[in-house]
Image (cartoon, rainbow, N blue to C red):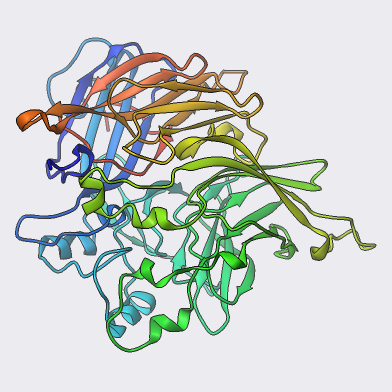
Length: 506
């Protein structure tokens, strides 16, 4: 069977100015930078086994209403609205090893020895930062689930070296890929996992200028696989799914299976919901709910004067979704994934003690389904982070998932109504960009990359070309489109940076 068009390796790097069909709003003048696996194999080099292990590639889309920045990205100038596009591999140690045929493992690829595991944990963390990008202070960083972050130039996308935390605050061997930003203060928060006889989740905060502060730590008998967490103005929420690891296994001599295969599904434990206060670092709630698994927290907020903590989470019944993302299955079209829905969890912090503190044992958690159709990579408007939100944007899939997402959706969490958009292609993560002068939550645009399906030999699917689609946030209809010079493999996450504007002087 012909390989699925979204899981090819893209080796072309280019910089071009792309004409826009339709019109961009005048205020959309920043840059979308996306991150994800750009190649799964190199000629005469290494190959990976899992979608999550592809070599990191960055993609920058700089919006230029009226083409005020000229032909900034190279190529011929265009009249009217333009998008300046550039893509580039993130040249890291992992990238160079793969080019040399020495890529020896990642999330789900390859076996490891005790020596290599110790080196990864203690001396040379994995740096294939292919998941998301963030700005910390003046630095733009590519991130993965390793504490080794990679700085890059947001204009050229050149890697500028590692960025690791300094100081004596406790750190871990793993980090959540998704930092959470409090828009009221600009503070970024993250959770790291430190393995040991008593393992711990370390919570830290980064000030807008990049200064790191330890918030608190939570002991755990067997750490869970954590990809993200939730944040409110007062609290950090960690959903400890029952996909857990005995850390002593990692220090057993001999060769071992890939890292993620060391985790075991233990549904009898349920899902532990840890609520940690950001000011004191104390755990104020620790209830347990049904066993579920999920990669992505959508958003979180407080209500009832802070007595209740509400977080939306994309969930699946168990962790078999990880196995469904091996490349041999994906390329054959055998997705077989359970398919995720969007659930809302409400933590009641319980009655106040005489000191005004909450008793951990009083807390409870309830769960309700907001949307039981298939979703992937859900997001909300950044203007609603840490605040009550109404709209969620996500890839739209079958449930169970029988093929890659053929559309994206806008979910109204108040009415349960979902509005879908499709153009016949395959879609990636939708990113909402709010109108800076807007006065309603969905006043803005939704950005998404779509991959058209070409026709290959004997009518089999083949790789076509990708487009960047701009949708009106309120009506969820197409407003503009820029066609890329090549097909982009299915990537992971993006961020919109309003400060990265088109300028002939850059």
